[in-house]
Structure formats: structure tokens, C-alpha cells
Image (cartoon, rainbow, N blue to C red):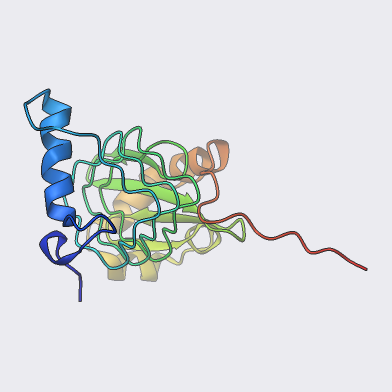
Length: 180
């Protein structure tokens, strides 16, 4: 179950809905606007579909499992943010931790987890790049009846794009292990 912005209280007592509204006003240059400072915020499982988070500071925010479908993350600071399991279907990426593109019918988003695994989301399906590379035509057909034709046409381009422009790993940096 996703948490609604009106139900999420931030450390300063404001709700996420209030911050998003102030950010919307700030983006439009309207009175009462302010940049969205959400660094370190606990936003796991937040429902942020269609949210305009362009230019927001989400550094170190926990967005695990958040529903960010069609969210605008352009120029957002996502350094050290946790994006594990976030739904990024149709999201506009910040072109670092979240990269995005669209080819005809389906939007693409890709991220890189702390272990260095590139995860590609096409429409509502997010899987490792390796799984997409070895995808079986029957599996693709089970996703959507139009998927096999689209995948046959764009497969090589999509895979090459993700490999040529990999996402920056999200989340806190791995702690270095020191051998003694």
C-alpha cells in the first residue's frame, strides 16, 4: 500500500503534500513558493505519481518502493537516495541516478543499484539489464500483445543506450572493507 503525500510528515512537521505544493509554486515563480528540500526524508512507499520534483533536493532520501510513475525528476539531486524497488514507469530522470528515454509506445527508465547492476524499466516491467538481454520472445509476448514487435524493433537500440549511458549507482556508497 502506498503512502499518500498528505499522510507523510517530514522532520520539520510539514506534510509532503505541503512541500510539493510549495515546490509547484516555486517552479512557476508564484508567491509562497519554495524549493523542495527533502534531503534525508523517509519517503519509502510514497505515492508520487505525476509529482513534479524537478530541481528538488532528495539527497539521501529513502524512496524505496515509492511510486514515481510519470514523476519529473529533472535536475533533482538524488545523490545517495535509495531507489530500491521504486516504480519509475514513465518518469523523467535526472540523467544521473535515474536515466530516461522513450521510444514510441513505451517509456524507459534505468537505474544502477549499489551492487552495480543496471535495472531497466520498460513500461511497468523493471528487471536487470541482463534479464532484458536474454529475454525470451514468449516472456515478452506475455507482457503485452504489442511488445514483441516493439522489442524486435528497439531491443538493440535500447540495450546499447543503457550500456552507453549507464546510470550512476544510487544509495549510500558501499562501505570499504579493510583487510587486516
